[in-house]
Length: 315
Image (cartoon, rainbow, N blue to C red; front, side):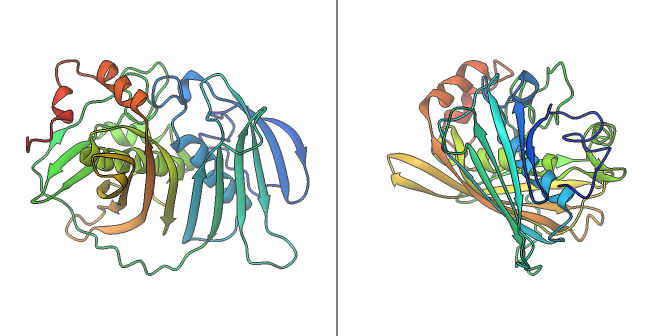
């Protein structure tokens, strides 16, 4: 059902990051079996949410419509997915003369409710997002060993980001650069969609974690994605310098013990450092789960430089 094949796509190309077994296919639907492996890990024991979201965006690019800019609505649910679980990845395109739309979902085998749903539609190009950069005064956040996005000791190449927190007068901003280090452009070769295009899965994965850190800085509690909205304005070149910028956007529940935190963010292109350009933006909501707060207290690296993130003092 996919008119386009991107041989360089790190997710679904000639050397795919996932293994697919097609179960059923028609002219506008496909159902494929996938297995989540250790290389897909985010928090210990579960896949990074950016990868299934990236699969949905990859499907949109292979369908070929709608064209940029697009708006994607993601919703997580079901009983969750663990490393080692098998799931069905399903894609359906609009038909019968309707406006182009791609619907995708990932459902764990045995579950009735999908782990992830995605709806991809055309978006208005005017966004009103201000392309401002924060100050250069920041502190680096700790990281995981094997996380697809922030893991620094993986056996298989990951995005290897190091997030940074900036204190403002009344809040926090979290950033992650791409391209500050020349090694990033070598790394980009592992995460392409096409010959010269950085895969949108890399963008949504870094965006997801960067934005989650922003919400964490208010609650000092970790959580899993519940809803993410993401607008992509144009393709991003593999050699393009980027800056991911996110900030808290509130909480839901009792302020003393919130159940959810919210955050928003944007991705800036720094092709012209004096005139940053917004290439994507979005927002999300995360459910706070104490087990993951406890996990990061025992698993973040460096071991001697993580406790400060649980202090609400202005450090």
